[in-house]
Length: 424
Image 1 (cartoon, rainbow, N blue to C red):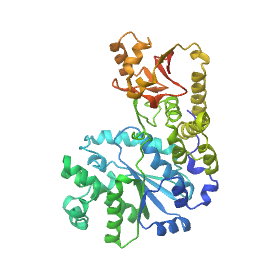
Image 2: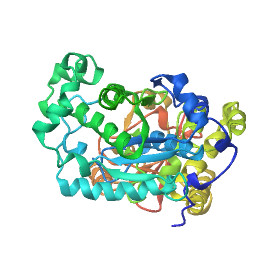
Image 3: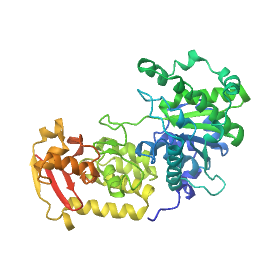
Image 4: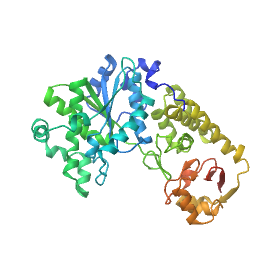
């Protein structure tokens, strides 16, 4: 597959702008420690910054793409990205945003996941040049820590009372917080201290649910070294319908072609809610702001142009322009009834049914794509069924009004059997 050079290699007008202004204009900035001081630093000198990713899966998903794009913008403005793959912290588990303890992974699984994630990060970041990205694994300094020494040197700087005021811990106190997870904030703060001392890293970035952990790192650096460091968080994204970003009836949208094909990936962006298009153009593309302003003014049927621009831009970044062109051509042929989909049969159903949701299993039977519900379940379990080009991954999947595109929904069974469900 042809992949374009990492976007960090490209030099354009964005490199002349203050990275703080770029991120703020695109909606990335949620909370910042000492924002005016940080803005001045970002505009006056190159800095090193980091974002951490615990390798709990073998692929990033669309939710992870927002912090990755923030790294891209920072690197394009001349700053050095440090991506931390948390081989150490993944063995503890971050309680942030979780109502129960994360599944414990083996060291072997974590190492395999980290290798896969490294390959994906190289699509977006440049590892060459003056501000070449760095890729580190915090297992290198966390796994050999001596517990008593760590408690005496690092733990003494933390107040339990203060830790319990942070939202991540407050939520979990109601459902149960293990002592293992309680240590996570200390480890993440220690990561920042190590990066500050070894690589001159002065900024940590991440999702807003990480605010408590990040502020703890800033405070630890101040207490141990009397140095100045900063934290910046991004908004926690949900779609206009309230759904977690990157989650669909078909499951998560991955950045790995084996788990989400370029065509399925392209279709995800084509199918986003109209209300989300402007935000997603700012977050997930490198289109100039003037182009985004023009696209976000489109209304009605014309908004399809904005969705097409969004889908093509994000797919190009992730899988390369050739894969994006192929996905675009396939999508247009399918919805215009061209090629193999030209004789696509159709069934009409009332809009009211989709308002409450219809089981995908039921629609597969109603349209005649399968003979029975048991056959539909087997088809889904084998990965052979899709909705609007997005593979169904669970037999409990529901099709709703949010899935309607151009007045209908397209079901597929196997490689070449299609059926259009028209909404009336």
